[in-house]
Length: 75
Image (cartoon, rainbow, N blue to C red; front, side, top):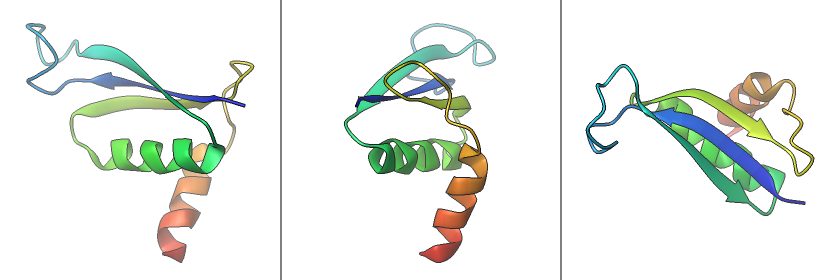
């Protein structure tokens, strides 16, 4: 199953849009742990907002924030 991580990129490299607009981006991962790891990276990045992880059917994963916090505290 493929997992999609969607987010809004407001970095200066996100084309010529005002910083408050940002650019929507999608990334795809073969496993849930890989998608969650990328989501955790994005949450730490000050230029990324509205991080959403979806499964292959397009359903949003529930409890993602909790899973990310637990994974970080376990490392």
